[in-house]
Image 1 (spheres, rainbow, N blue to C red):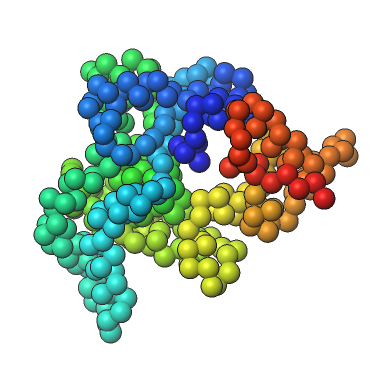
Image 2 (image 1 turned 30 degrees about the vertical axis):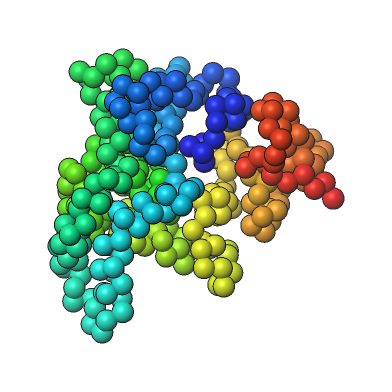
Length: 314
């Protein structure tokens, strides 16, 4: 979610979540890298977060998902051949017989439109960035980072999957479009073993977008609370975050318990969380209202936040 936010938002949220100065949004570093690498004009957006001195050698690259019509056009270009081949498999009798050669069919279809695909290859920018950070001979290796994780949702998840497999950096996606069937169409091509070893995708039930491109070996299917009539209701990063928090909890004994996003209750109809102890006097609705007010004051925003968007205290 942070990939969508400005620095005034991340500078407020990160210390509250990780502790003072334990997490940083390296916005200036990314901006300078975009200039030095001549990739400013490529409309893909990502952030680098570092955790020094907490974990000084670790960084997380968060890639923004589909937000504009152009982003959805990129989805169509990069994954249209895989989606077309999968549709043929699903809609034709005995379509399963094509399974062993699906990746070859995708490669043929993609070759026909290769020039168009090359123009919208967002993943080349994110892969180049990860390689710059991890390459010991690159000036940007001066960050001291030795391990990078990638994450993203929707298009951002698909780009994280591709870049993670290409650079051998672990990638965790929510509703990411897959690279299994298109692995031979990317530059450089991806080995299936690298998808198996470095990629994880969280795929809700009835999320049809996340099934395009094939599922990696490491994936988790999950329940979706959206109504059956809501075609794209399950393709929601925030709904998936709420499902994970509801099913798995928000912490373990001996560690910090994270708060439940207010939208889980007020937008997606999950049950309000229980008080951790009797010393907490606020209701959940009151806590959401107080946090929203603090967020708006700290960030100077004049609209509801994406983290605590509801202020109903009834």
